[in-house]
Image (cartoon, rainbow, N blue to C red; front, side, top):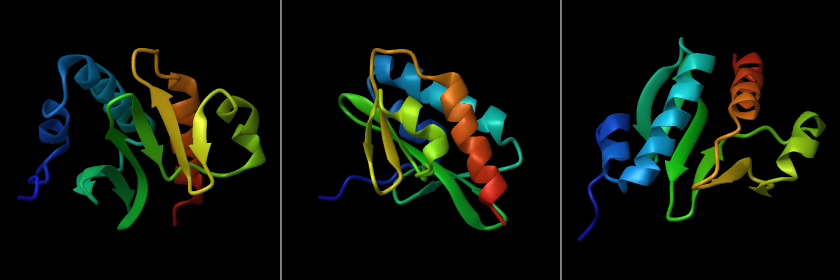
Length: 117
């Protein structure tokens, strides 16, 4: 049996343990503040933000981290990314139980906004 996909970001977050919910809500708030004009939705089974019909950024909760997707692979962020697990496919992982790097996440979102048509 397939797990049902959440219909909203709030529903998605509510499916996680309380400690994880706190960080997911914080991630949601950081992205929303950085891109208040973006549309919020569920895409590919995870929270997503889009602008002008184009996906901007996604985030997802896991057992030991929160993943942020659509992350730019530029030299501008290399030094800060070194502290986190990343992939060449535009993903960065923030460990659960550690504070989210608000300024880094904000800069990532604003960078994506600049590149959005």
